[in-house]
Length: 486
Ligand code: ADP
Ligand code: GLC
Image (cartoon, rainbow, N blue to C red):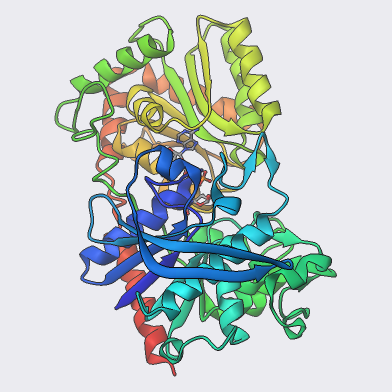
């Protein structure tokens, strides 16, 4: 099969979160199963800055957006560690910026135009016949205009795309691509699509809806989240739309690329280690404490978090319980994240009050993310909602015990510790409040003091397999089924 992944992010080129990891690791997994897979993303400034090479190919882009002529090219490169081609849609005006979607916590005001240009670039790539896919797999709202353009037969897309099927994966129903009605013409879509069963949403435009209603199949990234989003509590207003396309919605759990996230081979951590020999993990803890400037104490539980500073992640709950624990002299904390400046300030204040016990690092730092996964004892992920979550899966592999809330993919992947039955490999709590989180952390700390129990808990986690094997097969089955439909 020929599969084209259209996404706003792909690791290692451009990443703000798990979407980037999934775009690339799913592509690799499908390519390993014998499919021809290519990725297409915008060419952001950071891609050049980070030294990734790509060559322009002869596909000029020329389109009118908002009354202005916009031009660009398609560039081509390869995904490191695979044979997958990566296509980059270039346009200096839209993509030569410091951020992917925003700067200083503020979305770019022309995000709609930027992703209109991107989607039209993807269509040109297909039309040029450089890569004509059987399956066009679109990720998140930035790419949902693709099924909408195909629905509207945008500028008579080439014959060869007639049999092409579209899959839309929503990685997070909270980010919907919501724009005012008066920007609808920017999309170039006919007004016939601006209806309640199209992209119209309470009078304005909701691009997520385009993905849900115009794709041949919809997936999201865990089974539990697939049913959660059909409820008012988690559906972010789209629950009834989701219910109306229920038969086309599939929950397929994300996998992990263990070529990149594996303490046995990871070149970004201080010492490699494995289930059989955990001594390297102790060295990683000491190295992390040293690197961030915390006292090197093996017996003090070191708790960490790597994630977007966003209400979703429940980091305000973490800040609440840290104060409580720190006042009692419990634990050390390393927090890495970027996003909401208020959350950042909360952690900065804790660092100022408890400099011997708290380190906060802001910004995107891939190397430090790996070092935290390897170096901490416990990983905090008390998300209010979590479509899948990759960070807790990375923790397991690194012998770091995840403390998570019972929601979405966290609930589907982490089994609560049960001392009596010698079962479970994390600590799971139910309600999104700091008291419940505190209880889970206290439970974890008391097990941590029993070295034997802790080590077997770590090892049970390390033995879990969340590779792509099963999930890539599920995507493959879905694609196959779609191709058999007329
Ligand atoms: P989400 O996609 O909701 O942000 P996931 O757990 O699926 O959550 O994926 C988060 C990914 O982003 C992980 O690979 C994590 O290591 C990475 N990440 C998040 N914040 C940072 C950061 N500040 N620096 C480096 N990596 C980060
Ligand atoms: C989103 C979700 C996260 C998921 C990731 C990759 O950002 O918040 O839970 O793991 O996408 O699918």
